[in-house]
Image (cartoon, rainbow, N blue to C red):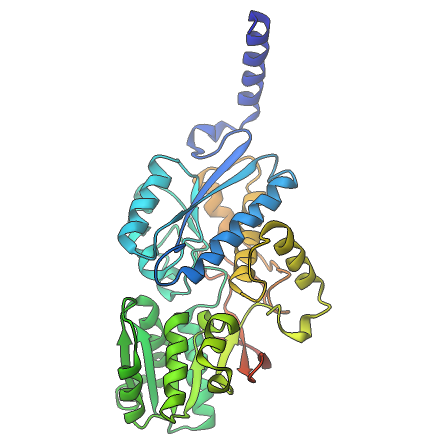
Length: 401
């Protein structure tokens, strides 16, 4: 390379450096042409179906980059497998921070997993944004000052709606709950307790499972024996399908509510047997692409075009890809709002000042809002009932706060 070329390149580098804001030294993971972000996903392990979330988000930022990136910078989303094991989440997150030097952690999946990395990220001054968990604990600003709940209705809010609905039909209802033995499952119990108050201990029978359990048949038999007339399934897809199937096989027909993280037709309702799930209630906050109501909807058409081009192997019946689209779109809005100042302080400032953001794949009327004192982007839901083929929404939007 000739000396003149070297001088020209050096001059260009100086111009680029001068164009960056004064806070450039604090902008980790950011160059003149790139924003580096990281996440962990369960691409293997017991809930590998949720890996669709990461695949969808990687595809979304591929689309963003093809369109020119964000304020002239391409987004480099590094998505690592943690097998849904918190120790692996910690290991992979340390790699993202210390080796890859990402600007922020985005949409890492799991309640225990995000809890395991929160203090480490706070110590390193790394934002933990739109994490893939609806656990209400992440809304506690004192405990998680640099985190936002995901773009989904919190589990605790969801359980409150179920309790209120059940009591509206039967004020003397007795509840049975199958829940994952971690913060995810416990949030549903807390939501019931919020509504039932002092009556909770006398009207709720609970059973738990571990993510490594092969089957939960014995727990379902025990819950039926409690005489409960309301059954809440606070479980991930594999165990949700088992719960629905076993209850049907033993002839138990209580009013049944299903956690909205497990409403997938292809991975839960069909494996359980659609006849077993007919009549089950849940909640929605996103548009279901399989719902005939959205056949001609512009937002769903745009999502399908995105999927076909950028996630061609993705199952367009899987609403995980809808959640991916929503989460990535919100992060894109935050990063756009940051302009050229991608310091941790400004990223957090923008993440905590989202005002009435409408997303094409959220249900009409649901908007994303955050503030310095509100780190819950979505708090509204609509009830829906499984009719043996699809989920039918009914009633008005409800808030669980």
